[in-house]
Image (cartoon, rainbow, N blue to C red; front, side, top):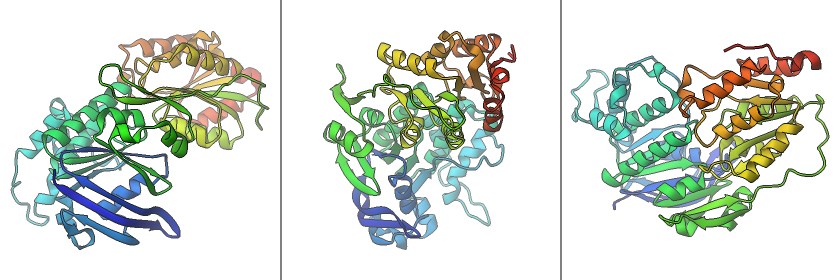
Length: 433
């Protein structure tokens, strides 16, 4: 292993706000490092400091043995590649041309030079499993395909250090596992250092060689999964009580949250006098939860996996929710808690989330209530790339619509539906699919 990055007492600020506080760490080739922590803990800021988009306020940083601040932009781009959480959609290029953008640090800007490594694009397509997409246009791809194509563009840059900011966001379980399997192969087989920002500690323990945990801009843990994963860490950083277990075959540690009870007195109704249960996941509920919370609705959420971005937002807003272990099927206890919240809700909002074998149970639980007239389905985008259940999820949605559920196209339309007079709001509009 070769040491690529050394950070010593790094401090970074946005105006008067300190985002990173005295962070020291080392990154080496041949390892996959998971960077974990709650929202706002400093993960993205750390990446931005390394690529040079956020200046250091204090401390020392070296890249490949050279002071980070002394490296020209082009040299840094040949050493570090970065995939941010979000990026502008850009032109509707063919995938091959889009991935070739990763070769720009090696080409002349005014008079284009021949690529010194013409095989780099093909290797990146192979490593990301996107060879069959090379003639497709980027905007025609599903969310999972587009994420793998973004990964291919980053890998085409062929840098020793690869930074991936939440590459599994908005992906269903199967695609999360596939992306991380491929990323681990890049680190181990291509001898690169890959740092992946993740919310899910169980995913980090399954794939990473090391886990670094940030909290409020400070490093609170750094080591192999066995040394880092603990119930005390989860309590300290995320405020969640959990039980630590190990897989029977691989002996990988994983955490099972202790689910909070939902039994007890029914909470007071919100300002609108209407209780709404939101079924979401993978970030699909972010705008819905914020808009309905601001509007004064009495919200409940779930079932969601622990560390999901929607579950973190629900906890931040103090909303009752049902949690489950990531990548585990919904247990009988979880389904019972979900049924309780569904029965208490006047309306059920189903966000446009990707549906896989494990979270299909959420849709089925909504259908089992037998009251489709109070179900508001947010329209899925495009054809069923969102359905990873062999069509079962599509069939559930179709049955709900036939039974009286309503399909809505955005949060403004959702707020309008919720604010209609009670009789009108609870009447389904009949089949739309």
